[in-house]
Length: 342
Image 1 (cartoon, rainbow, N blue to C red):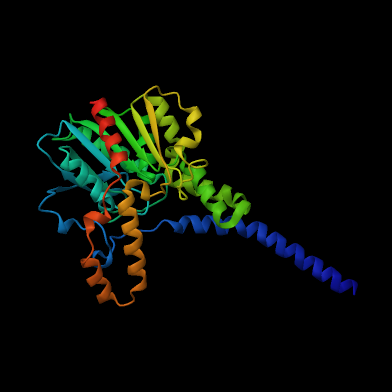
Image 2 (image 1 turned 180 degrees about the horizontal axis):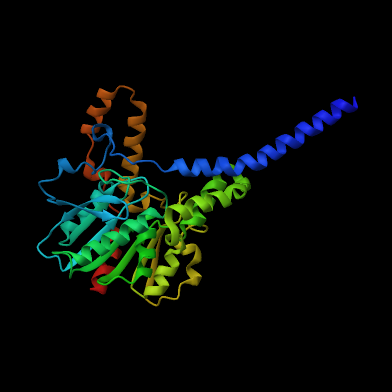
């Protein structure tokens, strides 16, 4: 009986020790492989204004390749009558530039020249999608490229970013690059490292802290000093005009935990302004109420269709403009903000 108790105790101690040792490595491995190459969606079964080929006649663009760290980014230049004011559009972590094609078209139709690009490891760019800090690196290199080359060199740069791209458009202000006159961040987070831990907690609870040390090592190896930049620091360090918008029902970047506005009491920039979009979620904040209702109807219908050919036929019948109609109140505020800055 004593031998059995001793054996059970030894087994229990071994299992506890194994768990303590393995959990950090499991967490590190999950993080290391969580960010994968982002490919273009299958446009034949994907609704909305995202397939450039369908609207290229009304939205001409030039593709431009340039370097960002170890990647070659694919940029898209929508040249209007004047490029005195150039809006740079930065997309989210699991998207590409054309995921915000409807935003680019909105700005272009109002007379602005627009530059968007695929982040590293996204759509038509090379490299790896390394994590939440990657959009900051890619935006910095993009601005450096535009400030060094014609015809963008002397343009006033107006930044627009969504989600991780919104983090980038705020945090990049710490680099004090020339020609940036204003920045807009929508549904953005403040700190990429803190967000990663919060996301981990939502999956495994407080046990995520057991693997934090290994994740920190991996992140430092990937991003180095870029990890030290936050949205709040960029907003305060530059004193550039910054406009932040966030949905009150955002479940992806929680407004009271992860967002820029969660720490708005730390903002000292006198040129900072923000807007709360009531009852809006992370992505739905971009769209009109009518578009959000239409999207819900369409997406539910697509999920219910099992045959691909039937899905293609249904998607072809969708009103892409109604699906992608923007939140007029929010974007009117953004345009007025830009106008006040230039």
